[in-house]
Image (cartoon, rainbow, N blue to C red; front, side):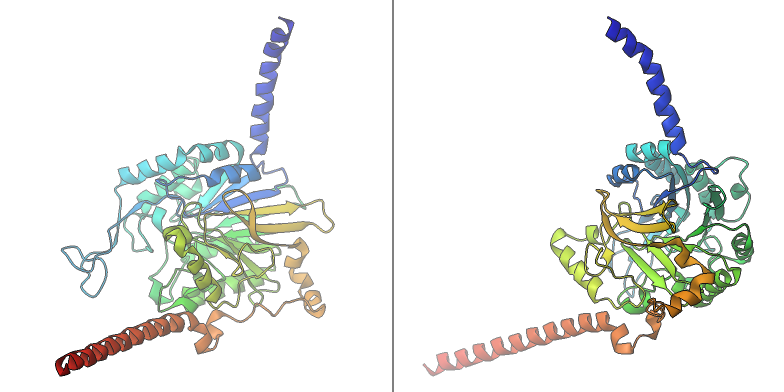
Length: 454
């Protein structure tokens, strides 16, 4: 009886402890932030076991990088028929937007996932969008439903009704966490609302967002500045996979990307690196000639969508071979990678760990699988991302020039190696089939003549 009484008395204290712990795990702007998770490409209709690993990482902040839901619709591949979505006779687009009610329902499905609900209780969730939650695959400023999509995204993110994000054209935003000396600034870009067509080499951000970004980068200092972009900033996969396929990235808008690098460089801001999503695989890339210190881009994609899961398991080793054979100049290769290509084509999330107590303070940037295990990462002192140390790094023989050549600067044969291998293999197979057919016809002809002679 006494034991039961004590248990009843302790129950409120236990509940109070759990509640206070849950609240303390949310990022208090005045508390030091040491763990940040991020991810992209989460189909609300698919199982999402990855949330258990994200919660297990125990982040104080989680950052959505787009395709937070898949809000558009997709017609099947059809070359013939009434609705032809591919080929020279295509008469309808393959993707088309949902109604407002349907897009809202998909956000509600995503928000109701038990694992994600648990994360929301423990961490502050912030984010931006990409094309599928913007409303239409590969869409930019021409998309007519963007005002409605903006409102629904901000509802999903629990943005306050009086937030400036609800008044502006686009969902870009910034956040500052931590006390002086341990500050982390997060800048989230909107690469959709003002973006020109992909083949234009026009605008990505638009003038109002560029002006805002300049103020943010020249504003109050922080030890670390994370720039979240829904599409890759550093890597230019399309330069080495074309004409087989192309993906969206800042490299498709070279003048805008160069402007971004110049702005970071001129701001003299230390601790800047990028996080991105979109491409359905994970990788870490690095560019040493964009600013006075290396610029990293940690791409995590996706939480459910991945290139390897889009094919039967028997073909997954082939996908890894293709990743290994694809030329790259900016990817970070490390013995810590799960696969030799240092890409990860299965569901994943990004993890940032900051050790403020180390001397000097250290930062670890990782990609993790659905079990929470690391599949690739880099770790270095935060001081490496300091423009005042750039000269010292170069003099000490640091690998500072290794990641300076862009993919577009590769020799033609190297750059198009993947396409040449594919087309060469197809040509060899066609020739082999033709030769086999000729051989069979010749053998049949000889057999027929022998039969007639007999």
